[in-house]
Length: 322
Image (cartoon, rainbow, N blue to C red; front, side, top):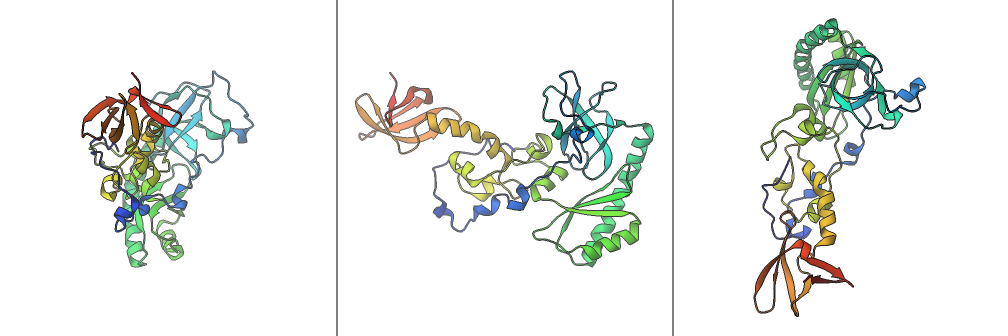
């Protein structure tokens, strides 16, 4: 979710926003814990390393938008094709996004069992219809049990008799009676999985305030931790409406751009710094990291704007290079 349209504002302190508890926008500890979608890496098959000529593919699970790497040593696989692969939930259908050119650790790579057949695809389409009905039934059961939880997604595994129900909740939920009800209706194994609000945004998708698809859905499924410190270092207003996404957490792009701003902070004098230039001491009044422009004023009220690459730090003092 890009925030390029956000105006840079004068830096404020946290105390200026005591009524706006932006700490609630940070990921909770339990939401930062992520587990691999891979059930067992290829190391479990006795493969300790991957040769350079081994084809590696990036796959995506359609129901959760999670991606992972896998190898297949038989015929090459085309982008967009479907394959059968083991996941932490069981054997399932995944889409081939395309080949990758790096050789990661073997523990992070799955093994593609086989390309999907016409029968597999037909079964997957049939499951989609059943998933809609299962979603409706589960939501009714949740209301009947008066459980404080929100159902997000339902998925039938392709090669195992199991139905996955993904939900969000502010607290832990005792859903044992709900599971009993669902088992009595569907006569199969039931698994309820609690996910975070950022995971929910990745699954359901939507448009961010920038007008583009959610980053977690359209750009990358890897949910990197985002902190208030990142917003502070990027000189953003501590306004929860401006720095949070539809999921209610800090914008993903704060994390994407953090490295750039961290580097620029070391190269450019910050607001309030004093700079020696033309035998005069100037005060930095505004720094625009994106355009690379620094505005300064002196004691006589004169204003100048200089490019960021004109500044250098010598013996803990900022100077303007001639």
